[in-house]
Image (tube, rainbow, N blue to C red):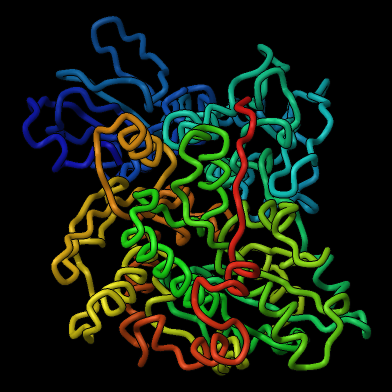
Amino acid sequence: MAGDPKEHADKKQIHIKINHRDMTVPEGITVLEAAHEAGVRIPTLCHLDLHDIMMVNKTASCRVCMVELVDSKTNRNRIVPSCVTAVSEGMEVLTSTQRAINARRMAVELLLSNHPNECFTCPKNRECELQALAAELCIRHIRWEGERMDYPKDTTSDAIVKDSDKCIYCRRCETMCNEVQTCGILSGISRGFEAFVGPAFNIPMVESSCTYCGQCVQVCPTAALTEVYHVDKVWEALNDPDKHVVVQTAPAIRVALGEIFDMEPGTIVTGKMVTALKRMGFNAVFDTDFGADLCIMEEASELIYRIKENKTLPMLTSCCPAWVKFIEHQFPELLEVPSTCKSPHIMVGTVIKTYYAEKNGLDPDNVVVVSIMPCIAKKAEAKRPELTKDAHNNVDIVVTTRELGRMIREAGIDFVNLPDSEFDRPLGLTTGASVMFGTSGGVIEAAVRTAAEWMTGQELEQVEYEQLRGSDGLRKATVKIGDKELRIGIASGLGNARTLLEDIRDGKAEYDAIEIMACPGGCIAGGGQPYHHGNYEIIKKRQEAIYQEDKNKLLRKSHKNPEIQDLYKNYLGEPFGDLAHKLLHTHFEERERI
């Protein structure tokens, strides 16, 4: 909460009462924050405080957080929204009077009167904050039945579905898109009863400059914004006897999937996840971490090449499709800066459709590659026309962590009690460096581990670069490699990426290498991960688990992976060589900014 006592330690203290309890609180905080400090829960809906990424949504539009202010002089108490009402000396607040509860119930009933009554089939069923709030307030019927919004559902993009009929105008998504991610795609449209949030002039999502980062989906309390659903496509492929269906799982999945089954955030469920996928019928279960190791081989080679040949610096890692689309729309003048490497799951898909298919005598047309990703943007990335090989998609279907959880439940698998299994080979042996791709700072640290040994010819004794780690959205560090000091910038969240890119464009900062992840905190907080509902402690626990998984690995440098070495020796040739460049690299293009 923004009412963290540490943040307000230097502010003037005032005296108030909450539910007849005397309190001393910092001047200027809201009643909602004061109640939080007192351990009193006031329900909210439009309010969202993601303090770790400096986002506070204070539109006060839902009127759910109403409380009663005592006026002893006039004996005329007032009902006010606690999320925007500042405390004052001597204020008396009552949070659970009949007037306050009735005001909350009326606000929710009014929202429900204009909301589709389809909870059973809604993609947000059991995750909907409006649904949970209606249950908490014991709302059993709606007193106002009548006209409802009736807008067509926007299914134009390959990543996000916009259902304006389910928009409650909380404007959380707008705050996230405009203030945190600085994409400027979403805004309020129309007025009064007909109001909803969408792109300017309500143009289709696919025609906007949306990066599909999915952070709007993460904060939407209802199903107004959800990911494109691909589970049915996976089941169809698994039940086609003519298809060889292969699945790969991203690093961030293994530290978040357990939350769907009520396990503690940050629980590492790698082995259980593999077992579940094998029981679901996949012909092979591979690890996207293999693609991360492969990506480091190419990115480290590209970085060394740029340094030695005085080519464009800094080099930006290009593993995040949302950030790639962001630079294409917002900074087309910097398109020579990103690495040309494909993202890890696209690399794995390419290797499966070529090397793996050839080795196993499979027709690539009959091989279906499914990616389990923490990211909604990966769905759109897989459809990019340049990411094909001989008219074959590198990746055929992308499902999110949430979708995988639904599939496991649908299959009747008791996930919590599953035994552990190992990934299949040869695309299942991975290193600790590749696991770190799941968190901000991890990609660049993995690249530095390899680049340092290649540039110096000496074995690294200490592989952990603490200066590259942290939770701040914008960081800079220096890493000494031999006689050279490598200047590194790290940004997570597209707003921080904008700051970093503007400094580079304007000549205010000089770097050799940069890592950018679109989601605040990195892939562990991706748009397709289990909903954190504003609790950023969950993200921190996922990050801790990522670094623990790195420590647990016997191999912690990508270039030390023997199966990566075999792939180059027996198929790809030299890193950054002709065949590797043909299969594992791509290009970017300027896109219109709308």
